[in-house]
Image 1 (cartoon, rainbow, N blue to C red):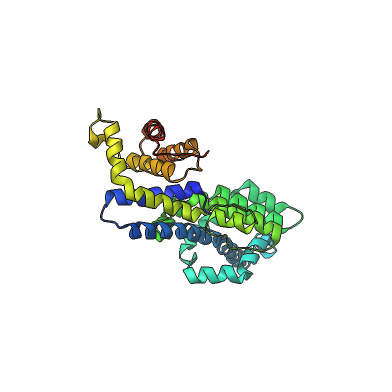
Image 2: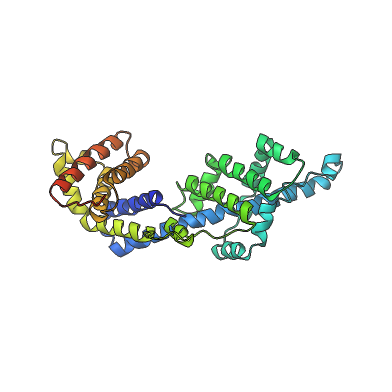
Length: 318
């Protein structure tokens, strides 16, 4: 589930916390890293559980319309395509999914106003209306509808953002990645007719598919954090010395941590090309640092890596 891009982001966050609080032990930092990794899969489960929750909301609304004092013909004979969608039925009947949801105590019951608003919005969408008007039903059509919902309705929702922020400190900015994973699960369920719990790391998925020689992503990110943690003070001094014309206080902690991670990665993983390493931390800086940081991170990390390659500190086999 977790690829190396998001693992680098998670490593950056725990190492930034260490830079701000040097009393944190390596054990505490690695424990926070593991908790962050598991939290992403928890968010995936929570967002996937909105499928039966929203379906149940539609069913309640449909039944309530039948009981109105003066029901219309549509109220009495509603289109039940969404209420009876096969994706929700699969998840509701899947013992593994239900066990996990119960174990995590995930529920949308307290978010009835959000579900109500979401359903009202959904009914106005052209893709929903097209789905409801289709002549035939199929699991693939149901999956396509949910793919549209995950792609269109959640990422920019302030209401959902507030819900997630209250639920977990780890969920604040991981929603886009998780939504893409949910979309992938829709495709898988449409193909196989069942849900499967995704392994935590992308390398585990590849290994399960029979691909040989796959390096462990868990080992990668823990080694990256360990290497950076152990040499952060050294890298901090190196970075400060490389920009001596600047006032040391003008260096942002985010930039220092990202450059330190880039140096640690270049030194620890000879099989990762230098340009891949630099590009990864430049991209992270665009989201987590200042508007000008990506240029600074790119230029200084490139120079420091070249200097350390010339001196033999960094050795590459690619």
